Length: 341
Ligand code: 5GP
Ligand code: MN
Image (cartoon, rainbow, N blue to C red; front, side, top):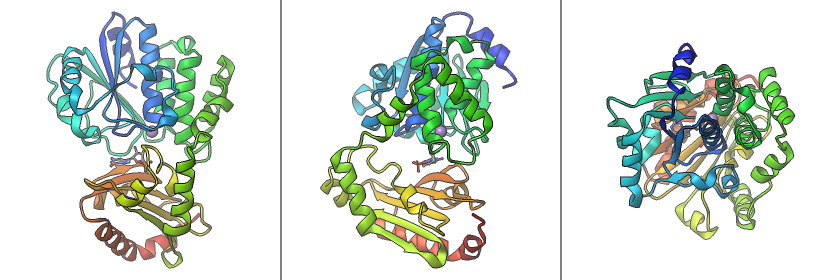
């Protein structure tokens, strides 16, 4: 970051600081937010983390979770007031306003006094902040927070709670240190976090080994009944109806990661899941190699993300969304067949 010394100067006196992240935050969104919040509190700032929505139960253990202000229609005034009083607004793990969903207008209408900080690794940022720490090559926003705190000269302020929150983000956004974004530096940071006392086994168990019975049965059902494999397009996908979500008492987070099972089939280079959320269809995409699901999500489904992991929204019916997806992969057949794995 070019203006890290200006940010340091700005943080030298106590400020009212808001941290927010994307709708339905995942472990990186929330982990980076809570890690950054923990650090800023140590500097003596008044910090509030605002989430635009609820998030999965397997993230409730994150240090600082109990203080997160989760937006719902009843606390709009509280969110508005907090934003109005802020000296600094931090946007973590997203970089375009629509990802804040309903609370986007509150943040977009901020004018004048509040400074803004963006820390993110998604493609095509559109928010223009006062301080920017954006790098599409970073494995996780939590990695960027670790680097930012280090560049601010405060690595020694990263304690176990901050470290656990950051480790959670790095662990999940790298797919457990599997994705090509997992550089030597990422492993070094993980090593440094272990050095300060982060219990990596504990973090892994809290995130990945805390399935509810319902979630596992739901997973079994969609993999056995709803997975479609089109080898001729090297594509596999899953559709989930609103009734199925109800039948399995689906909770926030229960569908997270399901799309990865479709991608794990040998020879498959593109995977998708389409979920009928009632008001719209939410899509998640995964790919391998050079096939960009960021481009696919941005071009056809009002979304984006990363080259190999992206999401979007569709306002057609589930059936029509599936049809649209099938037309797209027909068009992209040549490209899909060429992907090197
Ligand atoms: P997931 O499929 O796990 O929900 O998301 C994969 C990646 O794409 C994540 O980095 C997530 O932040 C991003 N993403 C998911 N949905 C959207 C969306 O609707 N718009 C944009 N711009 N990014 C998304
Ligand atoms: Mn992330």
